Length: 202
Ligand SMILES: Cc1cc2nc3c(=O)[nH]c(=O)nc-3n(C[C@H](O)[C@H](O)[C@H](O)COP(=O)(O)O)c2cc1C
Image (cartoon, rainbow, N blue to C red; front, side):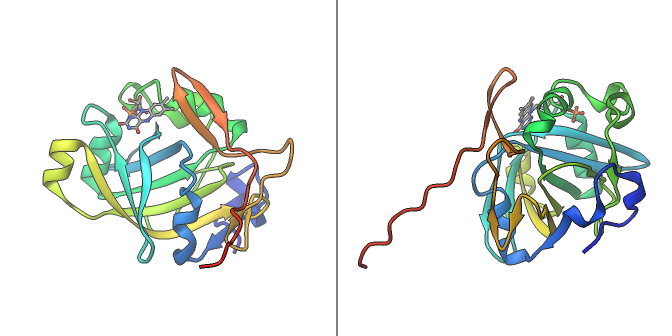
């Protein structure tokens, strides 16, 4: 399914393809660092978040830790929506930059030249060039949000770069872009090669 407003993106529209909701968990099941975009009251933002994980299959749910001092937290609580992204190895610098500055100090998209596309179900923008995008709404759980900064998100639509994720599985080519994992202090790992467990007798 071609992306809307593809002219705003430097990437061919055919690359972003809808992923069935039953497969949405697979986009983050291997634990990549994410980007979280938000929008509310005419403001938009994006930050890095490593502490994001699948919580349920269908409807797909995700857990995300969003610290209370972030601008993202304010926009997330105001709008009840966000987009989770799996950035690629080509976006390590972008991921670090949006994770080490605040949108309170100015629009990161403009400052960092981040191209976006409109989402289908939420006001938060899609960051162009990622490996996967998950449009989400907050399932309000005030005690968990207040006590642990923990947000439960339901995925409303999922997309992936069809050169990297096809037929329900990641397919990273040698030397090509991959998803990324944060260690600490701006040091990242690339997602490794797949290895399949042998299916023994039950
Ligand atoms: C790689 C990376 C991962 C991060 N993971 C998280 C996270 O899981 N949760 C969180 O609240 N902050 C996380 N941060 C910190 C936020 O991205 C950072 O506080 C950011 O500046 C907040 O931006 P904002 O104020 O514009 O929302 C991470 C930062 C980096 C660089």
